[in-house]
Image (cartoon, rainbow, N blue to C red; front, top):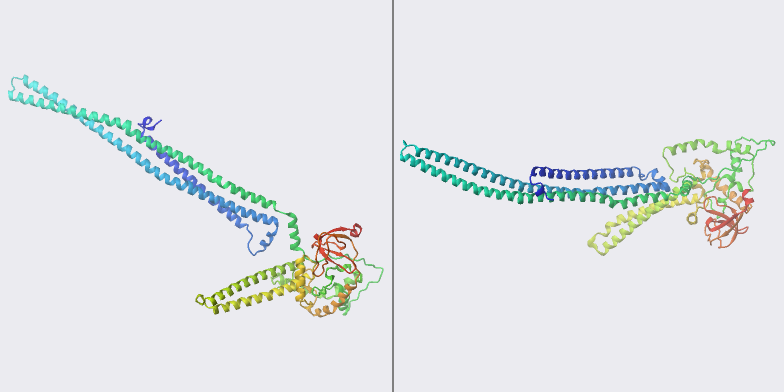
Length: 588
């Protein structure tokens, strides 16, 4: 099967067909190019989509992404970003492995086609020239033959005419001979040219054209093979990224499986827990007894004097466990009728302070957040203060690293004066030292507030107790610099600053009441699973295997209150003991 033998007379059709093949190849290139543009556009849209839903830095939205479901969503966005990157890889590989190669091949193909058909046209022109020469010699031979016949006839006529002179007859005879000779020469020339044309025609149809058409056939077959290879490459480029895309999808599935609803629920507790105790039961008011309603100028001071146990002394630390004791459990508190408590509420200073609370709430709404976060509930305030202390510690460490670097550079300058002037670093070193001192003072201020809050909250962890105890030993806080002592659960002040002097006087009496109170009853027993060294305030040491009494179960903060004997009681981590509560005591 050869185009040279089968299609020897289809030169023009082959020229059209090969041009169609090149157009088809260019169409494939255009298709792949548009596919790469689609992949790039798709990748760009995916990246923009992923970027659009990423949490903004230093915004409230970023804080919400601490939940596992939100973390999984962020992981999904990151995986989609990688997914978009694979589509960019598809576009790049198709452009480099298909479009560039095919475009180069098309140029080579056009050049080869042009050369082959140029040779074919040249052979055509040559055979056409030979044919024209043959026709010309043939016509000349025919003409000379006719001229010879006419000359012979004229000679015979002259020779038969008796009236013609001999000279004229001889002239006619010579003319006839000349014409016969010309005819013979034309015959020989025609025969030679005919043989030459037949030879050229044989070469043309059996050698030149088959060779040229064979080259064109091979060129066309290579084009067809190249299209097939490009289609395979097109599929392989997609196939190469499938494993990576699969990993992206596996990452999304893994992120979805990492969602922990219990952990998210615990994070909600940590985010919004105020640290306040729920209100106690309202006591029964016996209307059979006369109600005590005394509204006078001295009722304010009397009510405050009688309500001593309700005051808060977050800054008072005497090594006792009283900050962890609930107010309603004190057996020596005088139970007052509801009417008297209502009367005290109506005539006490907090009623007068409604305007002050309103003013402070208004300032908070206007964005004036107190530096000590005293507008927040205790638990939230503790977290904010701890976060601030951590940030300041990082800044101090950064400044200290910078100071060390400057010091090392100064030492280098001292050893090698040609590298620089050591005195030029003194100003920078002094500036860094000042910054460190400022940050340390700032840290101490926030640590004081943090210790103040942690001293009034149930212990949350061993680390928090250790930090609080360390600070109390170095910087014993006082009541008169405690903003939280004048704070109610809604974040508003409930005591005048002028009352702080009175609070200091009442603090001793308040502590004495807790010193005299009766011990709490046991609600069960517990067995120590591990040894715990209770070295901090409010804790108690236990030995593995030891059995003790439980007097207060875990309230959700990870600590259980236990007793060894009448004089030894404190808190231990709940995970260190196996608790067995008395059902009757728990129900009561």
